[in-house]
Length: 288
Image (spheres, rainbow, N blue to C red):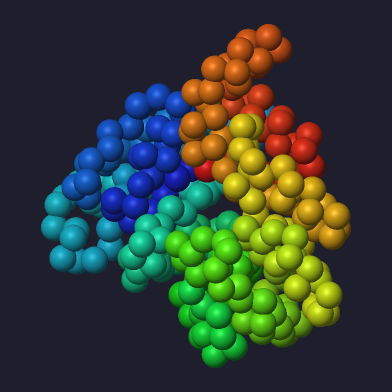
C-alpha cells in the first residue's frame, strides 16, 4: 500500500488536513505549536485508491524552538515518514507565506533522496499582482524560496483582485500582461507549465486570443451541487483542462443528503462519488 505523508513546520494545519481527508477526528488539532509529536496513520480512499495517510509532528529547526528534547525525535519520525512515502505533501500556511522554516523543511525533503522529477510543485501569482513588475517579482521570489530549480506549474490565482466580486472593474489588460510574463519564464525553462484559476469565458477569451501559449488548466471551484458547470464547459470549449480544486466542496458535499443517497445506491463512499462526478464532467482534480 502506498504511503502519503503530510509534513511541514509546526502549526500549519497538517493535522486538520489529515482529519479532513480521513473524515474523522483522528489527529489532535490545537492552535499551540508542538501538540502533534508522533506519526499518526490511517488507511483512506484518495482519488479512488486505498493509501496509508500519515500525519507527522511539526518539524522545527530554529534553535529558539528546539529546546524541547522531543523535537529531535519528532524530526526523526518525520524523516522516516518521508523515506517511506510514495507521495510527500509539504503543508504551508499561505497567510504567512513561505517562511525560513518552510524553506528548511523543503530543503530536508529535497535532501532525502527523492528525485526532483518525482516532486511536482505548483504555485500561483497572487490575485493582487496585476502588473509586469509585480509578476516578475512574484515569480522570482517563488523560484528563490522554493529553490528547486524550476516550478512545475504556475497559475494566475484569479482574474480579479482578492475578495473582489464580478461586475466591477475587470483586469483584461493587466491579466494579459501578467500572462506574457509567465510565457517568458516558460520559454526560459524556469516554469514548465502555465495556467489560470477562476477564469470565466470572457477572461479565457482575453488570454487565448492574444497569447503565444494557451493555459494548460483552469482551476475551478467545481463539486457536486456547485454552479460551476458553465465555467467547466467554457474551459473545455477553449481546449483547456478544467481542474476541480475542491471536488469535495470543502467537505460540504460529503454532508449533502442527495450525495449520501446516491453513494449508498452505488455502494461507494460519498467522497468517491464526488470525485467520479467531477471526472465525468471532464475535470482533473486537486483534492483538498
